[in-house]
Image (cartoon, rainbow, N blue to C red; front, side):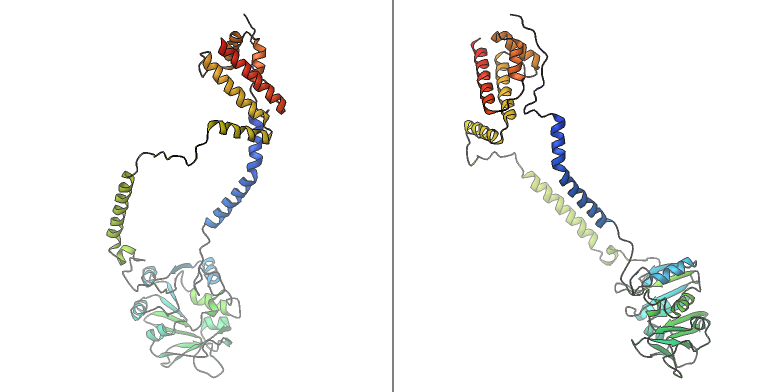
Length: 397
């Protein structure tokens, strides 16, 4: 018999579309995406490199109260090139012969390092480095009030000290040889002072007994800024040397730092040996990997029990559309195989073949296989019965 093939209606299952399902997934995933975005942004902020800064007292890159970043920035704005170094070798390499070498503290300096600094032709400024000063000028001894800081008058004719007027500092130096100029004494009529200058071998040596006037916390008090800027700004190039505990001393001035392989020569061969051991281990373990082993399941679940369990889940969720789509898909696959249709057969070909095999109208077959989903349990039962009858008619042919 002839039958007119009606236009095929898209199977919608439970009534949803691709767009509605995508929108639902987006709504459910949106809070998690927001949390993921916050975590990624926070991780990116934490991973970004922080501005170069240290906590070393007197360092030009220390923005804290004990640092001297303010002085370094003012000097740079006045045209002075500030070069921060932490080793004697780097200081010797940075000195040009027409520069100022500032040494902040001498607790990590050795006699060899001090001798190397003394040999420089550059102007030398020593801050809180009494032992290094006594090495350069043996007639100078440390005196004063120790760690007690007080406001002091210049009380000398040095131009830099006179321009400063007063400073707040602790400690002091006394020149027993009478060759140096000392300023800012600890009290009226007392010898020595917190600031000392002398000429030695054609270069100027300046010493300040306390780091306090250079610090960010005190540079704007009294005349500290005037004294410090005049003391350090005599040349266009300033080598700011802050000795460190890992300073190796005056090694070859052409090498700013010593590499790890220079310090520990066995690092390179040991590293190569470890890499070789790692490669051999990986190859050894990889060769032991065989095919995937199928392990027996601890519990064997019958297919009928699986089908009943899925049916109960559909019923509990009232997913009539999903259940109907599963029934229709199973029926369509079985009857298509019975009728000799390929897996790639489209809906019109299946509907036409079923109509010819069962004698039903094409519209009825299409409504049964590709119709709208049922909305209740009764409709789902009717659909299951109708599909069973349709499949039995195909098997009778």
